[in-house]
Image (cartoon, rainbow, N blue to C red; front, side, top):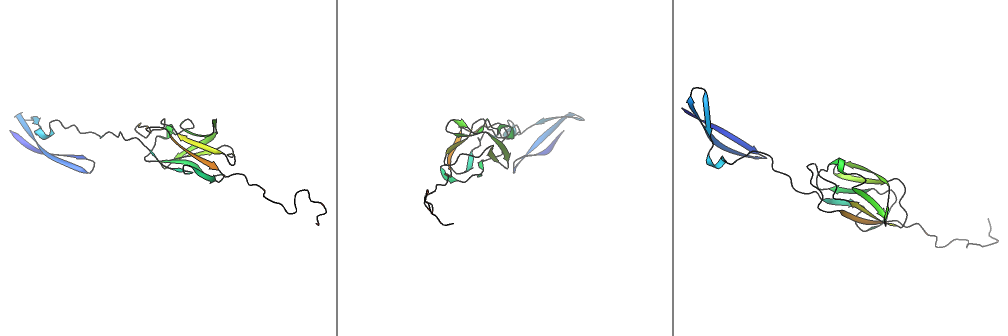
Length: 170
């Protein structure tokens, strides 16, 4: 005897339907045959091989007059593995000098907070290395770097009374 059984396979938002024939050589013992269109079908997950990217930064690349206290951050195209967002994979440098700081990762954004005030008027380079990975281990294709310049220290252009003046009324 044989019996037709409907089989539904759902992948994402798509459902595929076929019928399987069950054969009973003797009571209670069934064997199956799959239709040819499903003979090589192996249900499973579609592998994520898309590398993450940096989609925005603060400050923006080549920004000038960046105020003290402005966060230094990078936002990613997808959720990253927080264990790979560290001071080894997110660095800020002034020339060749690495700036010490702390990293916080939340909501697809990594934020670097320097442990001391950044020098006024200096140019800095922030870098996210390809050691940063998404949740399945895909790394950035290459390091991502951007530069910015802190606001210069104010300068005194004139004084009243002039420097060194004598006989000035109080």
